[in-house]
Image (tube, rainbow, N blue to C red; front, side, top):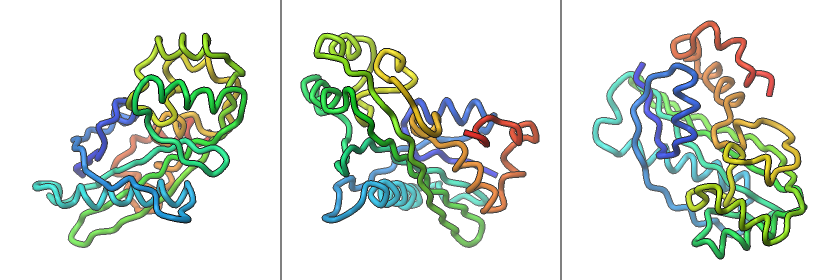
Amino acid sequence: MRVILGSSSPRRRALLNELGIGFDTLSPDADETALPGETPRDYAVRVARAKAESALTIPDTGREPALLIACDTIVTIDGVIIGKPADRGDALRILGMLAGKTHSVISAVALVRVNGLTELRTGAEESRITFKPLGREGLEAYLDSIHYMDKAGAYAAQEHGRHIIERIEGSVTNVIGFPLRLFFRMLAEMGVADALLSPSLKYHPAHRA
């Protein structure tokens, strides 16, 4: 089965590679404007679904059989959705808002199975992250150490995360942007897990965290 990752995220590509799944990539467009009254979880699921639906319109995507994967990851605190920073000043403002507090990371996954008929499933996972109470100097030093412009919340758990993160509750791969536990479950629900995953992945730690 052909697998298509509808994402330009190097973190998602790396996680899929670690699973030993061969895949093609593309970068679908989606309107990421939040709707009035939309919850953070609903927003993430809607955007992931929109990315998947957009990818289906790209020529050659519909070659059968295929599985299309699209994701969206957001940071949220007190019900406010925090996206990617506009510039360094905005990144510093965002990190200052999160410093010393606990926030949520929500990653949504949309899977589209194309096999004569089109089947679409969506899901989302949430993790809780507590930041260390760093001051401006510590936050500036952290920004100096990572590529922050393409990251929701202006940080990355996998890039010097120990300098800024005090505690993670929940799935670490969810925080990175591709919740493997959710992904495995959705593959099983769609009946394609055995076709895509090697038997050894039944013991992957993501099944437990």
